[in-house]
Image (cartoon, rainbow, N blue to C red; front, side, top):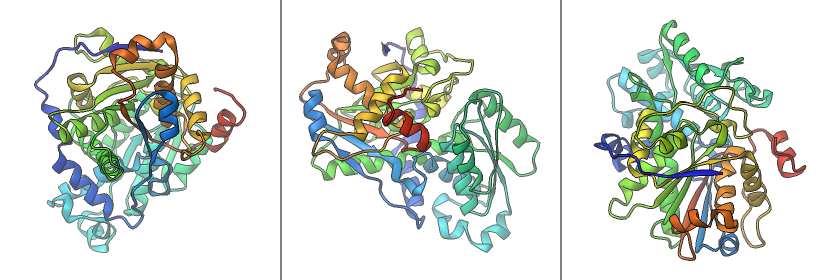
Length: 398
């Protein structure tokens, strides 16, 4: 594991407003309009906290989200609603689920084809939302994607394929095909110059999860987390969580640690460069953390992260496997959390920081101690059940 404490120059912080409370509340209200909506659990792991030497550990368990076993649907569904609202000259608050699924909406708007690239969870969320809303979807998956995840997407009436290129190339394929298709729209959480509006909406959709977690912590007697560990691929989720909590606690925001897979650690690479520039990682980026195998940062998120994040970590696969096992077989008295490879990496990293002597200096730098209240997000459950069993039951790490 490698890390870089943030020493990048600050910017004007103009992107922070993307995640202001009002924007996130609109997303939350939209998600509440779905008949499938329910607040996902927040597990409080008291025995684990005692074992690791911190005061409290909370894990937001997204394996229950809309029956899809992952959080990603929050972003894609809200972005699609915002797009349809924009195209029909309405506010998103005017197009809840029952309106979006109505015959009148279909008459007024017609059908769009939503294109995206995914390792599995985002594409499944887009496909599910498109299917529910009577829209079309096309999904490109990178080399190494599993057949299980491909089939889960196809079950939602999407056109889906596994390509012989990496995630970032699949994003370019989705954008190219959308440009050639009547009413084609890219729904991607990767932002680049000229493509920033929809990624911002996706981030706001992710804010529903952060808002729920903050409210649940308060209900359990915790006024605010002192530390948040959040995983990153392109950084959209990390920027969304970072941005939301800075807006919620502007006078005393939590210390945020961003964790990436070591073969795709573009944000860590940027932090290490230290001049604020965006850095890329290319190649196949083979890791068990498929959801984090992205090499080109979201420009909106990067601006938020470099202004507010304390530390960027590049972590190996075995730490994700460790986190999966710890959450699956908790200390007696704690709740079990079924957490997939990308969902459990922060648990593994937190454990290593607290228990391994070689990370003592990082532990001290982050001020992680017996007073710390740590929030983690288990962003996916066993989205590939056979791989999950091979890691948790059989002890494999690939």
